[in-house]
Length: 140
Length: 140
DNA sequence: TTACTATTTTGTAATAATTACAATTTGGGA
DNA sequence: TCCCAAATTGTAATTATTACAAAATAGTAA
Image 1: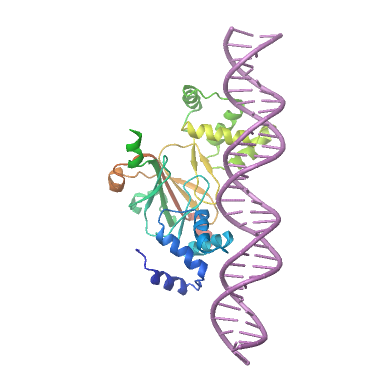
Image 2: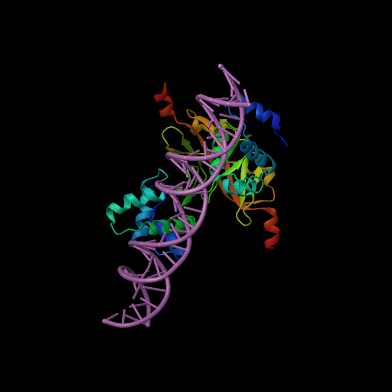
């Protein structure tokens, strides 16, 4: 697990975000399942352990964690938001055949962005689409 | 107007997409309003001229044009899809204060993407967020 | 422990974007 | 003019998300 849980808790404490049982569960889920789940996937999975869990709580928690900068919300398409606990700059590749979302390294040289000279950039997202190697093999 | 209308029509004819009155109107709107409108904005505006227009037609048309590669669907956030008639590779910057979406030039060197060596890339999207110069000025 | 207060969770209802689908309309060719 | 296929329309359904009020919970001070 790249981001140690203790460090995360510390980080949230400093922002006065209390870590309730439910919030810890959501965080744990995101840390363990780095497949960019939707709110619904998180809810459905956690409900198995926490039968009283409410979907509203999942949405609330994701919103709080996103605003705290601990989680990143990504919306590639399909009108559904996916969540990612990796904050460091990286790109997302969505396979149009199997739907899997892959991470990939990319660093965009800000000096190349002459069009955005006077803009304050707070968030960079790179989303690619195409076909992943596994699906390319299966097609042939 | 960068992409000449005649060329566009030709392109669509070749793909066996007939250009009905409604479809032409949608295309014209996108060509004239390069502000990345939502389906609803397009519908509301066009309805003034075409009172019988149906929102379903707008969605249908946008889907057809997107599949034909004449229009690009972009979903930065807010769970709403925006449409752009510029197909050439460029990035989108959304100002978090005024909501405006700006285009900017960017070309991503594929050689830098060693993580995606065996992937077939069909679509590249770059979405940045932050504050645009005008809003930066107003804040101070 | 008890009482109090603020925060969190829960569940239901509302909202909003999009899609499904059947009926009607339209336009081009025989 | 008639006919057929394609396009449009309007309504209803679906889905993700948000709003909101009531209930539960946790932490704190007496």
